[in-house]
Amino acid sequence: MGLSKSFQLVLFIIFGLLLYRFYSLENSEVQLKSEVVRQSLSQNIKKHSDWAENGKALYDTLSQDHKFQFFQYIHNTDKNYNFTHGSVAPVDKSFKDKLFNTNLEDSQQFANGRLQVRLEAQSIIDPSLKELQAIAEIIILTYLILMIIFAFLINLHKRKVRYAAQYVDSISNLTFQAVEVSRLNGILKPLGLALESCRARLKQSLEQIKLENEKLTKAAYQDPISGFSTRPRFLTFLDSVTQKNKNSFGVLLHIKASELANINQMHGRTAGDDYLAKMADCIRRAAASKNLKSENYRISSGDYAVFLEDTTLKQSQSFVEKLKQQLDDYSQSSQVDSVAHIGIVPYQYGNDPVTILSMADSAVSIAQTFGPNRYHYLEKFEGNEKFGDDQWKSTISNILKSNSVNFYYQPILPCNTDHDLYRELLSRFYNHEGKHLPTATVIAMSERYGLNIDLDKLIVTNAIKLLKDNPRLTGLYAVNISASSAIQDIFIYWLKETLTHNKREASRLIFEINESGMQVNLNASYNFVSEVHKAGAKVAVERFGLGFTSFKFFREVRPDYIKLDNSYSDNIEADNNNKFFVRMIVDIAKRLDILVLATGVEKQDEKLTLEKLLVDGLQGYYIAKPEPVIKSD
Image 1 (cartoon, rainbow, N blue to C red):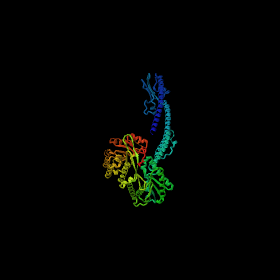
Image 2: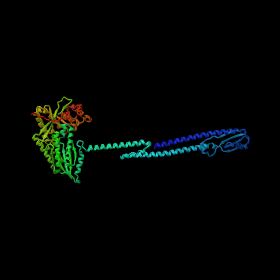
Image 3: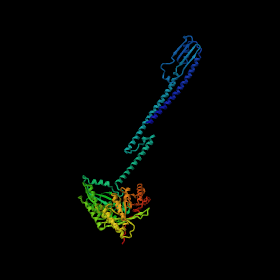
Image 4: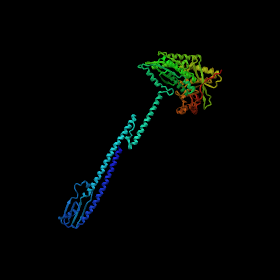
């Protein structure tokens, strides 16, 4: 719009200047003609300078060649000879007189009188005026035609711009209709091409965003390792099948990867992920072999859930048996003690989802007490889930009575230090049939039922016996004990007495305790460390860095070692935050003469980075995998 007005103004000025130029030319021509006529008049008057007759006769004589607007002759002596015609200054001066200001006056002194005249200018002005008028008409007509054309073009241009603006505005609706490039031709052709290019790129970008969004949604709701749906969708589905207004029923299988922690520790995180993926394959193959429609979910790091809709417990037995067979085959091929345990419960509309989950968890707990790859059914919702608690309590009691514990060991590689580090003893438990039980579950259940002190006594006693009976085992060895035991006075007293009576073995023992448990009671933790030191043994704080770590913890508890949680080793070469944390812990620990050990080292890059950060030791599958302790004959 601003450009349009500017163009009109410029065009008006140009045509105005052009018209003024023609006027100037015509005015110059009028002035030139006026001068010629005036000179002719002056010469003609001079011819009659000796005029002796009256003024009227002189007027008649001169009028033959000239047309006067004003004529006045004044005789010197006889006023009867005077003659006057016309007027010197007309009252109403015409436009053309104003337009062309001519000088057609003359006055001369005769021998007998004086003459003053003014010629009429029409004969001179009219031709120029007509010519100027014709030129002005042409100029004005041309200007009007150009303005009409310009207005038409501007209107056409506005329509194109309006179309472009409407198209840009419609992009927000994501319609992505093709641009009518023909409507944006001429000077607007680049705009049309740009809009079409923008439309194509924006459409492509939005399609890419849509794909990325689908990937993010898939990542949020589909587990990348197993390919199953994740816990949020599991909970949604569980709610939907238990709603009172739905006539639904079926069977829920809770499948626990009981050995995930051990596999991660013994073979590394990559092996743990492969283990979970193959477990998922076992579930798929079992369902495919029975032509069952199953809804599969990974509901935690090592737990799967499978819904068999419109299926009774009896009908599910063939699937469960097939799944156990798949797990047994995988266990044999991979030489893993156990793959998973299965808890099976029925559900129907109107059931409480929390109760169903509690029942399924109890069913798995019971299955774990039976040995590797076992399953258990819980059919009723009448409090029989407590049977799982009793089963575990009985199982742990049998472990304590039969002394059913064995050890693997995993060394820690010293680096950047001359300190002699140690090997970690990893406990393994068995039921009364000699079947391997999941270590993490045994320890967790022992704490639930208040048997953790007895279990830790069993571990310590067997570790001392192992060192005493096997002189080939040299160096330092560490055993894991529960933090809840370590802060109990009764356990501390027993441990001090036991270590005092076995001073040689005590000097070779290191007790590993979880940091989060020690943070609960710093005074009790300090007391434990102090009494262990008095007995000649040492203390290591494991999984360090997951809890609230403070300088006060270092200063007051003063362990001999801290073992960083394995999450700090994972891809530390590319994680600046973890590097900063490890560097800070190493700096603080060295000032207090505490050794820092990194765990979960599974790659060379991790090892090299941690060595540069000056940790004192490295433990993980890349350094050495756990192996069974070879006892002396």
